[in-house]
Image (cartoon, rainbow, N blue to C red; front, side, top):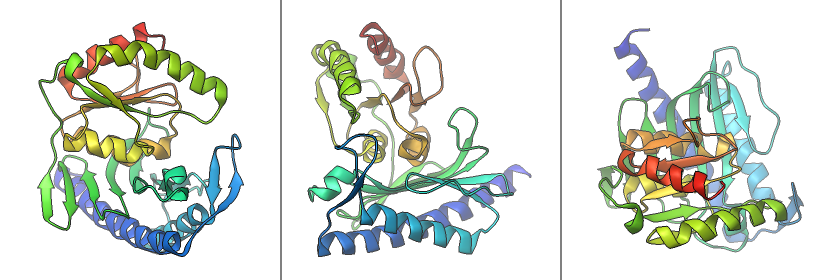
Length: 277
């Protein structure tokens, strides 16, 4: 495939991902307004699933397969659908389920398309969309095409904050559901917090990554993320000029994900490594 053909293909995939994410966000918001409750738990009693999570993923899967039946689908709530095209859709139907449950306005629908397996170390992200159904904000990017934020006031290109000193950096993070993991993350935070401007905990990794791309946050890190948590958001940060990876030169994984401007990335990862992350 020529470079022009690859660019056109990624634009088409972004258009489809946007349509799917917006349709899913609209129906998820309607369900939230009618009222929701916990349908089940996963890894721990605090790791909840609602009917909105399940219904939204079913809708997303149906829309993907209707448009592109040969693609694979890798999502949070259902089994992997193995495709034959080499492309995989990496889907988080609701990122920030606890926020959804408590009616906090920071939850999102995240849809990405990657070339290769649903493994961040081996895929090439082609398109990604993160929608906040409550605010109507849409963060999006396609490979080589930059990143944008679309909302009621229009569209703007996104760029990460460059030239921010670590001591002046506003950094977001998240916490796992298991008690032992939370204890580990809290120990790291004790060392990190005195070295930065402040910490934020929004509750949706996809929105955290969108905020880094938009310059609303300077950086983000978290241990224990799944591929669907950051497939779209990671691409959006990269296309906004940021760096996304793990520690000690490793790619992002469930071991660690760090997103920051290039000027801040190494210093933040060094701090995290020194804190035992």
